[in-house]
Image (tube, rainbow, N blue to C red):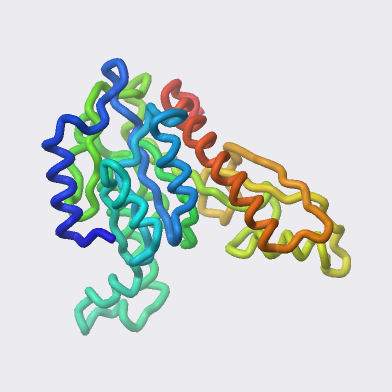
Length: 285
């Protein structure tokens, strides 16, 4: 995993190396920042799709709320390496002065950390933020701070400790409508719209098929969705939805394996769809 010094060095190399990914037909690539909390298998699916399906996009930064996770290693080992950064709440807490009132106020500490994390996300100058196995709820008012408040061409005005890969070329947007708009954020959730919100969706679906609680109808399918992020948990408008049929006698581990395989295809589809919508201006309509 990269240290902060490594990230600064990587960023400098990326700025100077003209052999890094160039624009297509004079238009710069879409800047995608990915947030993770663990192994990064969905991040890997996105990385694998960059030369083909997602050739008009570039993952400019990978941020994690946990240190020493496999997802950060995937970013660092990519060719070229992707700037990556871990910023956990415990790390933030340790950075506070001993007399900080936040140390004795957990809700305030959480809110302050969320705002600081959001600032680091904004520092990467993303066109799109993808929550790919991100296991933290971003509450208000932090969520509402994710607004594009910079001009096109200022993508290099970034915080060096977070980093951001270069995306040369003209704006991919149809007009100047991007400035002042909320930064698009999408989240992958392993359940169908309106079902099983939260961190235990697969477990909840498995139980609802094999041992539904009294008064609850047995389900015959589950699925995944990639949806717009809004303040309500896992309740934003779906961008991509995939149904997955339940199988009698299947173990929960096997169900999870099938779900993850669908996730890896769907998250690529979602990024392609959202960047197309950004390009024709329909994301905000």
